Length: 143
Image 1 (cartoon, rainbow, N blue to C red):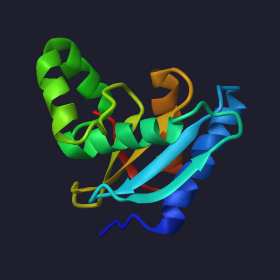
Image 2: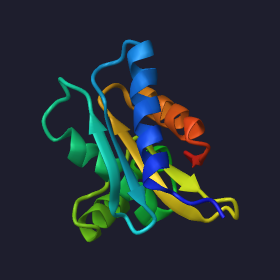
Image 3: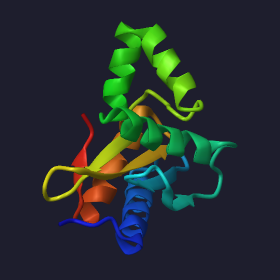
Protein backbone atom coordinates (compact mmCIF):
# COMPACT_ATOMS: atom_id res chain seq x y z
CA UNK A 1 0.00 0.00 0.00
CA UNK A 2 1.26 3.46 -0.91
CA UNK A 3 1.55 5.74 2.09
CA UNK A 4 1.71 9.52 2.14
CA UNK A 5 4.62 10.05 4.50
CA UNK A 6 6.02 13.36 5.69
CA UNK A 7 9.17 12.67 3.66
CA UNK A 8 7.14 12.15 0.48
CA UNK A 9 5.07 15.27 1.17
CA UNK A 10 8.26 17.29 1.59
CA UNK A 11 9.61 15.84 -1.66
CA UNK A 12 6.41 16.92 -3.45
CA UNK A 13 6.93 20.46 -2.19
CA UNK A 14 10.65 20.63 -2.99
CA UNK A 15 10.24 19.21 -6.49
CA UNK A 16 7.23 21.40 -7.30
CA UNK A 17 9.07 24.53 -6.19
CA UNK A 18 12.19 23.50 -8.10
CA UNK A 19 10.12 22.98 -11.27
CA UNK A 20 8.55 26.38 -10.72
CA UNK A 21 11.97 28.05 -10.54
CA UNK A 22 13.19 26.19 -13.64
CA UNK A 23 10.19 27.57 -15.57
CA UNK A 24 10.61 31.08 -14.08
CA UNK A 25 7.04 31.05 -12.75
CA UNK A 26 5.65 33.43 -10.16
CA UNK A 27 6.42 32.60 -6.51
CA UNK A 28 4.56 29.45 -5.51
CA UNK A 29 2.91 27.98 -2.44
CA UNK A 30 2.39 24.22 -2.10
CA UNK A 31 0.23 22.39 0.44
CA UNK A 32 -0.01 18.63 0.89
CA UNK A 33 -3.02 17.25 2.77
CA UNK A 34 -3.55 13.71 3.99
CA UNK A 35 -6.73 11.77 3.20
CA UNK A 36 -8.49 13.34 6.19
CA UNK A 37 -7.79 16.83 4.86
CA UNK A 38 -5.18 17.53 7.53
CA UNK A 39 -2.15 19.58 6.48
CA UNK A 40 0.83 17.22 6.12
CA UNK A 41 3.34 19.77 4.82
CA UNK A 42 3.46 23.28 3.39
CA UNK A 43 6.05 25.39 1.67
CA UNK A 44 6.01 28.84 0.12
CA UNK A 45 8.61 30.79 -1.75
CA UNK A 46 9.59 34.29 -0.83
CA UNK A 47 7.32 36.80 -2.51
CA UNK A 48 4.12 34.78 -2.52
CA UNK A 49 1.00 36.88 -2.18
CA UNK A 50 -0.96 37.14 1.03
CA UNK A 51 -3.24 34.17 1.79
CA UNK A 52 -1.57 31.81 -0.72
CA UNK A 53 -1.53 29.11 1.98
CA UNK A 54 -5.32 29.31 2.21
CA UNK A 55 -5.64 29.09 -1.57
CA UNK A 56 -3.30 26.09 -1.87
CA UNK A 57 -5.12 24.32 0.96
CA UNK A 58 -8.48 25.22 -0.61
CA UNK A 59 -7.50 23.65 -3.93
CA UNK A 60 -6.38 20.43 -2.23
CA UNK A 61 -9.29 20.39 0.24
CA UNK A 62 -11.86 20.88 -2.51
CA UNK A 63 -10.38 17.97 -4.44
CA UNK A 64 -10.59 15.76 -1.36
CA UNK A 65 -14.09 16.90 -0.44
CA UNK A 66 -15.49 16.10 -3.88
CA UNK A 67 -13.18 13.24 -4.91
CA UNK A 68 -12.09 14.95 -8.14
CA UNK A 69 -9.29 17.30 -9.10
CA UNK A 70 -9.87 21.02 -8.79
CA UNK A 71 -9.72 21.41 -12.61
CA UNK A 72 -12.85 19.25 -12.78
CA UNK A 73 -14.40 21.34 -10.03
CA UNK A 74 -13.76 24.42 -12.17
CA UNK A 75 -15.63 22.84 -15.07
CA UNK A 76 -18.48 21.94 -12.74
CA UNK A 77 -18.54 25.53 -11.47
CA UNK A 78 -19.12 26.71 -15.03
CA UNK A 79 -21.89 24.18 -15.56
CA UNK A 80 -23.49 24.33 -12.10
CA UNK A 81 -22.36 27.49 -10.31
CA UNK A 82 -25.04 27.34 -7.60
CA UNK A 83 -24.06 23.78 -6.67
CA UNK A 84 -20.36 24.62 -6.37
CA UNK A 85 -21.21 27.74 -4.35
CA UNK A 86 -23.34 25.62 -2.01
CA UNK A 87 -20.62 23.00 -1.60
CA UNK A 88 -18.03 25.70 -0.94
CA UNK A 89 -20.27 26.98 1.83
CA UNK A 90 -20.86 23.44 3.16
CA UNK A 91 -17.11 22.80 3.49
CA UNK A 92 -16.52 26.03 5.35
CA UNK A 93 -15.32 28.02 2.35
CA UNK A 94 -12.24 25.86 1.84
CA UNK A 95 -12.73 24.95 -1.81
CA UNK A 96 -11.02 26.70 -4.71
CA UNK A 97 -12.48 25.32 -7.97
CA UNK A 98 -9.62 26.00 -10.40
CA UNK A 99 -6.74 23.80 -11.58
CA UNK A 100 -3.92 23.22 -9.12
CA UNK A 101 -5.57 20.79 -6.71
CA UNK A 102 -4.56 17.21 -7.51
CA UNK A 103 -5.65 14.02 -5.77
CA UNK A 104 -3.02 11.51 -4.68
CA UNK A 105 -3.94 7.86 -5.27
CA UNK A 106 -2.59 4.80 -3.49
CA UNK A 107 -1.56 1.53 -5.15
CA UNK A 108 -5.14 0.28 -4.79
CA UNK A 109 -6.46 3.50 -6.44
CA UNK A 110 -7.82 4.81 -3.13
CA UNK A 111 -7.39 8.49 -2.36
CA UNK A 112 -4.54 8.98 0.13
CA UNK A 113 -4.28 12.77 0.01
CA UNK A 114 -4.12 15.81 -2.22
CA UNK A 115 -1.72 18.57 -3.17
CA UNK A 116 -2.67 22.17 -3.85
CA UNK A 117 -0.41 24.61 -5.66
CA UNK A 118 -0.97 28.31 -6.25
CA UNK A 119 0.97 31.35 -7.38
CA UNK A 120 1.00 31.35 -11.18
CA UNK A 121 -1.69 30.48 -13.72
CA UNK A 122 -3.88 27.57 -12.70
CA UNK A 123 -2.47 25.46 -15.55
CA UNK A 124 1.09 26.12 -14.36
CA UNK A 125 0.07 25.43 -10.77
CA UNK A 126 -1.26 22.03 -11.79
CA UNK A 127 1.79 21.27 -13.94
CA UNK A 128 4.23 21.76 -11.07
CA UNK A 129 1.97 19.77 -8.74
CA UNK A 130 2.26 16.85 -11.16
CA UNK A 131 6.06 17.20 -11.26
CA UNK A 132 6.20 17.19 -7.46
CA UNK A 133 4.03 14.09 -7.15
CA UNK A 134 6.05 12.22 -9.77
CA UNK A 135 9.29 13.08 -7.98
CA UNK A 136 7.90 11.60 -4.77
CA UNK A 137 6.81 8.41 -6.56
CA UNK A 138 3.15 9.18 -5.90
CA UNK A 139 0.26 8.67 -8.30
CA UNK A 140 -1.39 11.92 -9.36
CA UNK A 141 -5.05 12.19 -10.35
CA UNK A 142 -5.84 15.70 -11.61
CA UNK A 143 -9.23 14.74 -13.08
